[in-house]
Length: 249
Image 1 (tube, rainbow, N blue to C red):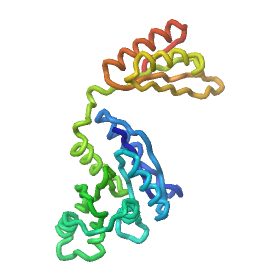
Image 2 (cartoon, rainbow, N blue to C red; image 1 turned 90 degrees about the vertical axis):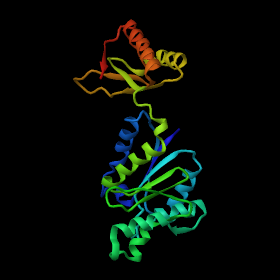
Image 3 (cartoon, rainbow, N blue to C red; image 1 turned 45 degrees about the vertical axis):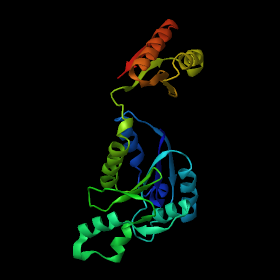
Image 4 (cartoon, helix red, strand yellow; image 1 turned 90 degrees about the horizontal axis):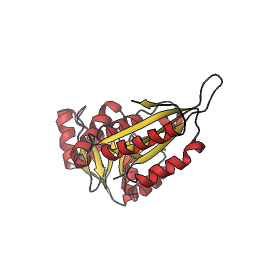
């Protein structure tokens, strides 16, 4: 099942804030034996957001969307999601209960606005301040604040996709090959992909600078047994070609 990220906010695109969500989402997925298939950054312009979300809802991906779900005038994600789906916005009863529980007699219409989601949504609990996010069509909308967003993403992964976790069986194996370039190992890479179709092969060259040796990281990832077998082949063939190599831990 493909997992993707949608990271929203003019402040990210302008450089006023540095994105931290992409790396964290990759980490959260990897720890569960899952991987990220794609990522997209988009600003807060409503029309562009609607277009982006319309495409995303038809992608078939499980999408984690970060940012823009507050109730200030510069937050447009909730409205854009509703427009992309062609549904109305409505105050979610569970979100309303959570917000009233959080603020008590200090609840205001503005605060209740944070519980207005596209019709058909379900809430995502927020352990930090109890103001929930929402999910619809396997899209999970969380705040831009990491302290809130990351526990909410973990809750989604463990509650909705726990059956997909296979962290103990998913591994990555790679070696660093000295003084080699990709062109010299294309035939080997093709053989690995042919012999082991269930693993994903990757090749990460570096650009040699003066005084340093050229290196190439070559590896595979997937289920432990087949990945180990593919790496055994790579090591044997790289050695047979006379290259010096080292295992990466």
